[in-house]
Amino acid sequence: MEKRRSISLGMFFRLAAILGVALWPGGVNARDITPWKSKDNALVIDAYEMNIIDWEEMLKDKRIAGFISKASDGLPESFACTGDHGGDTVAHCKTMWRKYAVSRELYQTRRLIARANGLLWGAYHLARPGNPVDQANHFLDYAEPRDDELMVLDIEGLDPEKYMSLEDAAVFAGHIKTRTGRYPMLYTNHVTAKYIATNRDRFPILSRLPLWYARYKPGIRNVFPMGNWDSYALWQFSSATNCGRRRCPYRVAGTLPDIDVNVAAMNAKALRAVWAKGDLLPAKPLDKPLLIATGKASVSVGASIGVDLTVTGSIGRVSSALALR
Image 1: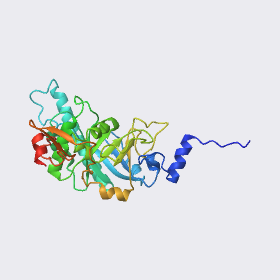
Image 2: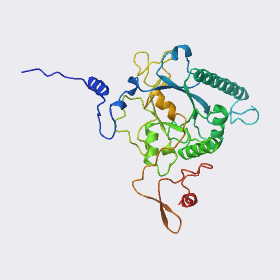
Image 3: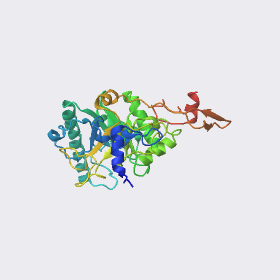
Image 4: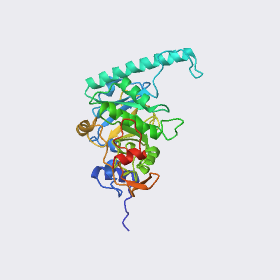
């Protein structure tokens, strides 16, 4: 009897990726399995102030098309270390202010180097609890984004005690749009993205921001489409979470394993064309009309509630929803 040759699952994935064969239903195909291995997909580095970077070495990797730097973090630092610091010491306050000044100078230096070498530039705000309008203003004052630079709102999770609430995040995004004419991209993990997508009637702005998706797995089986998101804009696939001395999805020369690496769903030329557009994604119809109680009757409205309410970010208020009809 003739022996049949066996093929490992890993070999199957690699073969499928080479041939471009769709592996799963629902639009997820071979390009969504380790797409960073394809030279056609552009890579983007993102870093915070403590990441060590040898720019001369890193720039040798011609697949790197962009660099996104951490900019602001929560509310702005105090300019004066006087008065009540909520239990903090004056000495620590002064230390934090010096750190803030140094990190901002580092941000400007990195931007100068990146842009001089033809990289796309972007900046992200690490969202914390606290006034979202003040945080948005802090981000714009810190990053000073140019018209061709990407802006990103970083929501790390759903706990409002640790991170900016989704309601405040909508206000943040709306205020950025009011001041710049463009919306930011949304960076978040799978749990938070899924929650926003499932409740997109409550978050009509957040659910339509281009998605920078953090997921440290080789594939995205059964993930997309997710609400209004058909796919990711950027996929953060490598970080200190899954990159070490022995194994790493992608090693970037001139950096340590703690550097974050992202893959775009397109090549560098296509990425440049959409990088800083700041547009909302098209809204998909809700499964059923959203009913809003007005006190006298329930009014049925579409999925576009609050999309243009960018000044105050008051999403889904009854009076505003009715005014859009």
